[in-house]
Length: 235
Image (cartoon, rainbow, N blue to C red; front, side, top):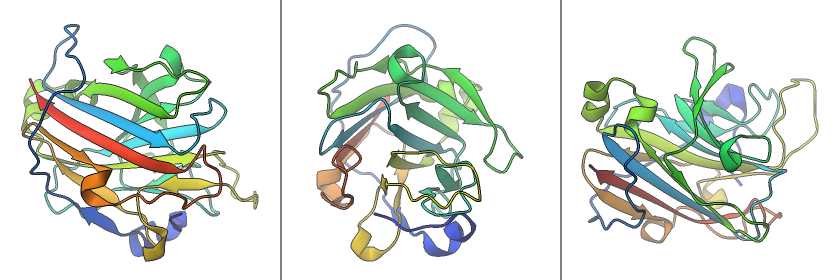
């Protein structure tokens, strides 16, 4: 499990710089509704099952920075800040039982709020229903949902991405209660590692290609991320 306090995120949290060069093969069906620029499809699998009383995040940082110097990292110790993530991110998909549209909800970070104020945008373009025995999340968004200007959306080449699973979102800085958190990265390295994704071409990257996320790094199988897949599909 990554270890990274909010105030030390930039010092203690590493990054995994990944220039994606893998060939693409569309797996999610295209959906005709709404304008589009480029699709990003995400799959996350846990060792146990997806629980609606837990919270699962996929965070995006629309930096367009090819070096990936800043990205989203988990918060695992006080001060809790927003209760789930620090570092740098501009948007996130959240899944839990309190969200609309089958549990999936896309949010934007309101600028200049120190990652503390969020605006609900809309559901994903496509999502897989989560049944009581489901062990994975699957959804698809378009860049136009993150960047409303189609020209700026089309010009994006790099984003940073992380996946966070937690049993609690704590915001009281005086609350010392521990929580269970898993995110991308190998705990043997002692850091959280986000992806720096090149998105200007169709491509796929998988956990099997990187060995970035190991199995059994948290004690709760319903939070233990064991596999993931990100597909970028040009329209």
